[in-house]
Image 1: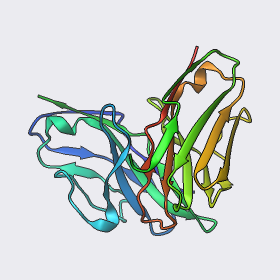
Image 2 (image 1 turned 135 degrees about the horizontal axis):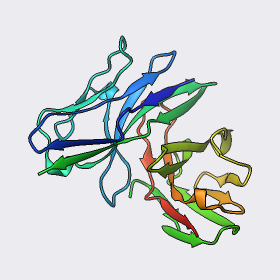
Image 3 (image 1 turned 90 degrees about the vertical axis):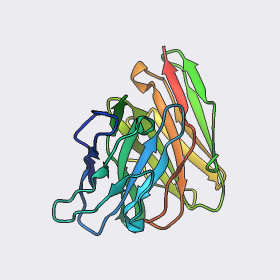
Length: 111
Length: 114
């Protein structure tokens, strides 16, 4: 079974402060991990993928297989970062792709 | 629009009624997913299809929920005898075969059961 845990429902930080959104996973194989974001009144969209090893809007995420974590980080939070963030794992289930999302963390950046 | 259209965008119904939610993905993507989104439980996978065939419906909460995908460009999620706890945003998403591929989401249908 695959599982994604986001321990924080709400994270409030001041503008300019560092941000870390936590994500832990459970999966027996090699995981494909993603962060999705949903801004107010917009549809859910991809923020970044672990396989791309990219930085999007100043956010990065490193896969730590030892700790089974994929935390999302940004050194200096901006007001426009306020949104709902979901961590997701894409695994293999019986030969088919299966995606599991965490319960999400609402990031609130205080001006 | 990410290639996924959902209708209606908002649905208000009374308890006990039946609702049908619709999703139109761009064809050519093998997978289609239905999710339920609430503040309490986040994003829950209800069911997903591969090449129009239901693969895993273990997330469907009760047999009041059913989903179909008659062709590559259309899917429905039907909820019978609706209850107030069914109030949520229902999202449809598409992706390709590859595990590394992104999921592309529709705008969702906000269901309110009075």
